[in-house]
Amino acid sequence: MAAKASSSNVFQLALEGSLESVRGLLDSDPSLLRAVDAALHWAASGKHAELVDLLLERGAAVDPKDEAEWTPLTIAVNVNSEPAVRRLIAGGADINARTDRLVAPLHYAASRGRTEIGEILIGLGADVAAGDKLKQTPLHRAASQGHKRFVQMLIDAGAKINIKDAAWNTPLHLAIEQCHGDVAVYLIEQGAKTDIENREKQTPLQMTKDKQVLQFVAKALDE
Image (tube, rainbow, N blue to C red; front, side):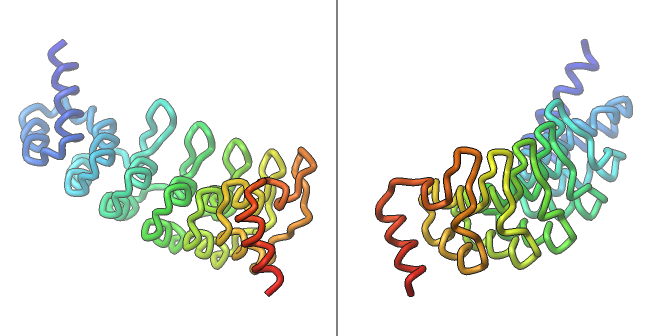
């Protein structure tokens, strides 16, 4: 029971970012080194970049996976900790690691509009064509959430504009469905097709009944 309690202490201190406390525990009880892999997840979750450094120095594997197959890098991207992202990548983290849903760090950056982190990942060669279990790419994610700058970055990096997900929706379908008119117009300007049908036989312009969005897109197309 004592070992379990001590390991739990390491995890809690890692989440809190208690750098010196974690260092002290590891120095006083070398057997706790087996807990550093899991502690790395907690440090990343708490956005504690210096603690990430310490755990890596003490031998933590850089890409351990939790029950959902998230790596510390995936977590750092999700919580928007650019410093932790940089340290993990410097330590050799796999920028294309997948969760049990086949979601990569770039998917999470795209979903949440983490532009700076997206630039880092794309700059290092993250797979812009990666598909998750729904066959959605980071471009699907960014378009559906209305993150225009991220959409631009992905297209500049070579993302396919008319790629279909499992429901045969293109990023344009999702942008219009979620009423992101500015993103829809940009996608069309970059070559997105308005006549592609999804599995429900719907074209992108049939994905919403919002007249404002449809008028906005129609006006842009007429100009």
